[in-house]
Image (cartoon, rainbow, N blue to C red; front, top):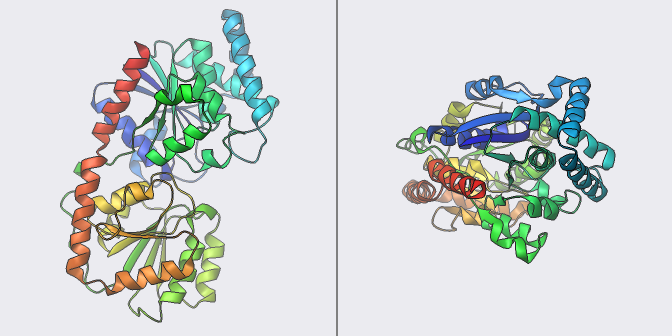
Length: 405
């Protein structure tokens, strides 16, 4: 099949799961055209991301004149399709309340319609349009589908979509789609809240996946105890500030605890200030963004991954840690309990509770190495059986083919 993939910002360090999905589809013989509204403002450190950037068409790079011309051409060629697309854009615009990417009033949705016209003009011959995230990328995919007559679908990840489901018109987008994908059962349950029961059969769970060949036999656990790694964007939803506070609470009870923070973001300054306030500079190391090889190296150097998030979808970092044979200490939110089994592959803790997080870190540091290794082995077996990207891509391709038929 010929597929058109639409993402708002692509590629970016936190979206490696999209790259893996595209790569698996191409390995299965499908042709995938990459379209993004814009490039990531942050520099790309991973060579695979830089290669993806070279293959991605960026709509907003074309400039306002090109967007206006594409809108005019689409209206002249298919006036009835344009009328329907205008009605949908207006409906989405009325639902939008602003404050979340992909929301906004009717004027902003006219811009999305112009973006969709550019997309529709680029994807002639495509069998299916698929968007990642239920924000403006799904809006553009829906409108491009109307203008081109090509069926569309989208994958909802969370948590952003579930923060503003009405403003994002999730129910309307799902009703217009050939099908909608959630990456976890939890995600599907949230979609069911905002869609009609008649649309539920077209809500499918297709989890994100890892590339097993990139996770060969895990490295043995490092010497000592209590080396933790946390990986993610330094944003409010990831809970990194709380993690530093919890480490300060745990440190007197577990002298060997050490934390490596992999990532970056708008809260870096606040995190650095919190580290200094608690005099934890000798216990916390910030690496910045790393490529996939660097992430795997940090996992190999750790005894466990810690995920202190307040909101998530189905975290890829948890899958990667499990594939690397490392147990996981995580908050029991969203799709995380579908990955982590307490007592078998790690620990689940209440979100937003620094004391509970500290207790979990102390318990992990006190766990014998052979027990940690056994938990890591169990996690690896679980993720390889349930989250192989080849299987997930095959499931998606089957849905694409069914919608085309």
